[in-house]
Image 1: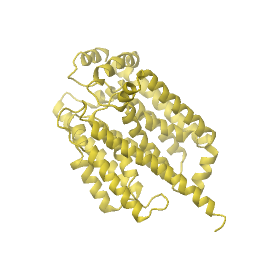
Image 2: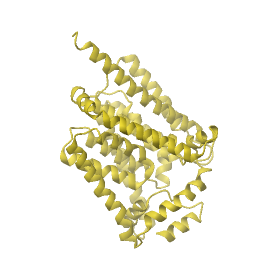
Image 3: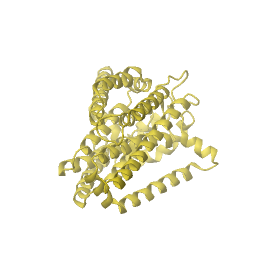
Image 4: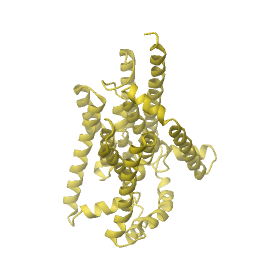
Length: 362
C-alpha cells in the first residue's frame, strides 16, 4: 500500500489519493484483474445506488410522484457533476446512498438495532472517505441528545466499525502502518492539488490574511462549542421530538447540510463533489412530511429558489474540472442552497414558538 501511494503521489495526473486505506482495501477486495469488467460493474452499482437514493429521499420527504420523476431526470440526465462522477469512477453517488440509508434509519422511532446500525454506518461513512466529515459530526450531534441506552448502542456500533476499518487494511495489505502513512502523505497531497481545486476555504484564508491552520482550528472550536451546547439541552430535544413530529424532518435537514458545509469549508473541492448536495436539495423540496405553515406563496418561492440553485450547480464549466474560476458559479449555488437550508431550520423553530404561544389560548 505504501509503495502504491508513493507511485500515485509521484504522478500528478494519476489517481487522487484522497480516499482512505479502508477505501482502497474495500476496492482491492472487490476488484478482479479485468479492469473493463470491474469498471462496468462499478458504474452499474453507482447508478443503481444513486437512483435508489433519489427515490428514497423523495419518499422520505413526501414529494409528489410528478416532482419525484422530474427530480430523477434532472439529477441524472441533466446534472453535469453526476456524469463527471460516473465517468471518473468516483464514489460520491455511493456516498449519497449511504447518507440516504442513515436518514431512513433515523426516520422512525429508534430501536436497539437501528441505534447500533446508525453508529456503524456513521463510522463507515467517515472511514471510507472524509468528505462526509460534517455529516458524521451532525450524526454525533443527534447521538448525544438521545437516551443513555441509545447513546450506548450507537457508540458500540461506531466503535466496532471503526476498529474494523482500522484493522482491515493492515490485515489485507500486510502493513500495519497504512493509516499513519496515509495521514503523513495527506498534507503534501492536499498542498499539491489545492492550486488546481476551487474552494471557499482557500478564499477565506487568503482574504482574511490567516493561515489555513487558524481557519481549521476556528472551525473545530466552533463545532466543539455547538456539541457542548446541544449536549446540555438534550432533554429539551427529546421533549420536542415527542411533541412535534416534524422534528425528525428537521434533523434530516441538518444532516444534509453537513455535506454542503464540507464543500464550502474544505481546502480541496472538485466538480463532482456537488453530487453530495442532492439530499439537501430534496430535503428542501415542499412535501407532505414535516414542516409548518406551507402556504402556496412560500412553496412556489422555495421551488423558484431551488431551481436557481440547481441551474448554478449543474453549470457546465468550459475548461478543466477544478480550477478557478470554473467553480465559482457552482460554489455560489452551493452557498445559496446551504443558506436556504439554514433559513428553513430557523423558520421551523420560529413557527414552532408561535404555535406554542398560541396553544394555551386554543
